[in-house]
Image (tube, rainbow, N blue to C red; front, side):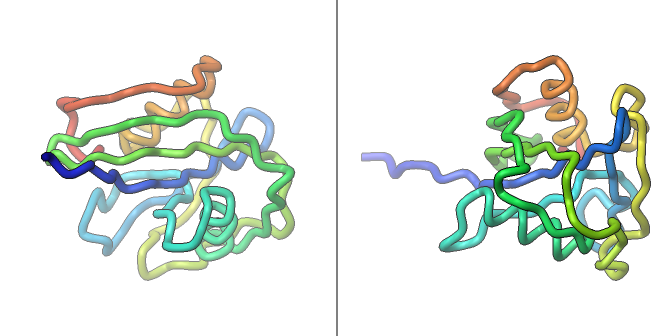
Length: 151
């Protein structure tokens, strides 16, 4: 009997200020370096998706999030060209404590606010797809064997 497949669970934060959102430039990670992505990470053992995004936001950009201020806005089942499958949990909020700063300069070249309808071309596709679905009000999507690299 085939064994069940367990994809990685990722959490992504759409931190909103008006019509802008925060993106970080990856560096020294070995994957998608030079590209922009949302504050994000993997769900760890004994965490739920809310705990994970609260932890990641604090670790990566130094802000404190409240569970009740987070909105789950999109869920994506995704497989990149290398064949890795992931479930992306996209959360949005416009409420947080603290000013976002780059707290991981060893993995991030910098953070900046970008207009949500004009994402830079070098935004990680996995993230830009999720943002696009969120803007359209689409609660879930499946992206299987997309032909773009650095998903």
